Image (cartoon, rainbow, N blue to C red; front, side):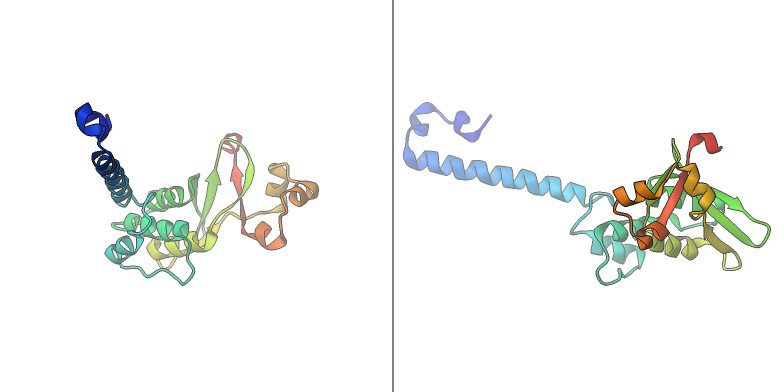
Length: 187
């Protein structure tokens, strides 16, 4: 119910009262919008103007020109970095940062490989620099970290052709930053 409808009819007919009620109605809506905006700041995924506060809380400084998405990923990574680091921690961090399920494969050469999983084979572009920085932040220093990259075998597994790449306006640089997603049938 609007403010105008809460006031008796005899007062609503007065031009000054109507103007005052309209102004109060706008102010109430502005306050409601402000409350909703403040609520969004409590969650990393929807935070905007509070990102510097989140960054201060976790002790990071964003690089110049960092996007909101990369800043959010860095905050999430730092929050997930506490405690003991194991394959599950790294898997959970990678999943939280990319939105794709991940698998950690421990290799025999003091390294581990991170693969991304999906419902179908696919090729996606991820912010690999933020992901690499975050994983290196929490992984043991003696272990080398590898993101399962694009090989010809995986290129073919996702049914990619040069024509599809051209249709996607894919540059060589973007292709090198792309990560294969291994479909359920890859398990």
